[in-house]
Length: 112
Length: 107
Image 1 (cartoon, helix red, strand yellow):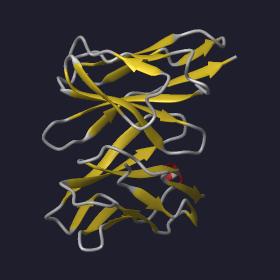
Image 2 (cartoon, rainbow over the protein chains, first blue to last red):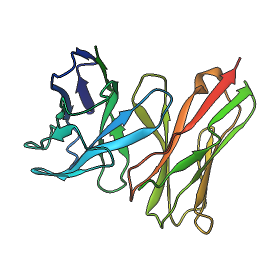
Image 3 (spheres, chains in turn orange, green):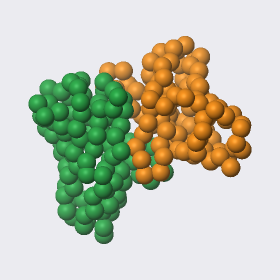
Image 4 (spheres, rainbow over the protein chains, first blue to last red):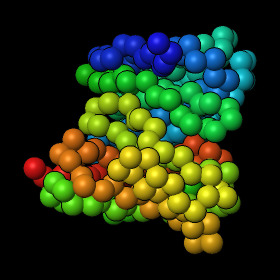
């Protein structure tokens, strides 16, 4: 089955530590996205990549970093510079013809 | 920038009633999409309407698009408790979301 796989599902980290969230897709989609969702809120765009080896900042990129070395993978690193990293993180990819977004099941990060 | 903005923020209805939620956007679009999110899960694509379409149906879902008003509406007919979720719109041109409409269907 094709889809988006995010891992880990739950992650705990101490303040001052960097953490990397994994996102893998086998849908052969060119574009991939990372969103952050806080409780009861909508999704905010962190970073997106429309092609391998290229990515752009979204609306809340500060304190985050990404890489896109392979078409299938778009990992997100939450750095210690992110002041309030506790949130639900969603990864998605799009069909290039319609822009339909396919989402993973999310990673919930809690900073202790 | 943020294209899609949904309203109302919250909607509570009884099972069997219809639910209508709205989406407004700012600039011209290629298409507009509606998504559903169950609590703690990823979003799931529901329906897409292209800029040259005015209405589209899929099962109990009906979507309309008014490009002159830059708005769309999602109607869920004969709602069920299982429809309880948050609903979001997004445009192909922007890939950004509003705060969503939180729908509660009471059995």
